[in-house]
Length: 262
Image 1 (cartoon, rainbow, N blue to C red):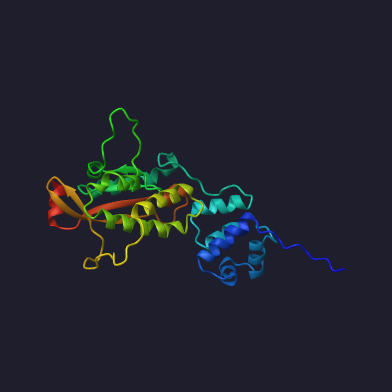
Image 2 (tube, rainbow, N blue to C red):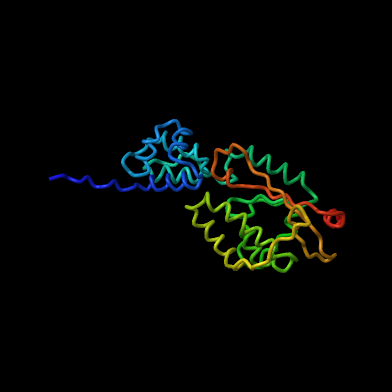
């Protein structure tokens, strides 16, 4: 009688590895070449026939350009402790990062600048940006505002082209989502944006006469045009720092410039 060997059961790490390899559109051979390991070993890891060392997990994650938070999840799935810290911005070890952020915010005055975390929570804001944030409600606990919640709430009244800005935000978050499949908090925010945006209407294409999307703000002095640029930290070694970005809002014409300067 011929005994049949039971097929190996993919491990949580194997499933995660295959997800990231297919997300990056790499063959097992291509990934193996990048990580400096035999293709057969990659296959065995995905199918559960082999278990990785901690070093192999990190090598594969690096080869796949996996975000730090997701690398920690890969390590946990393989049975190892997370390798990358996730410290609050107030932590003493992030003093250099705070120094750079303070310089950015101060130098951008009189135009608004916001420091946002990976879930679009406003961590810091310069004076100009604080005037665009709704004041805290009397008697309510003071919480850090979230830019997505503001967009879905009070900003509907002050952004003239709100639907266009919402759709642009949706597209940007959808691109991020492919690298954040294990981030339930982010995916919940995206689901709320998807729900508010609704189905894409046939013929509802963005205007192309302007090379960038302008956010039109309703002010007491009339509608002003602004545009945003984003600043990220390169070579981050902390989950918090990698997930942060600074949104620098600029006037898009002379009228908006005069408004912010006043």
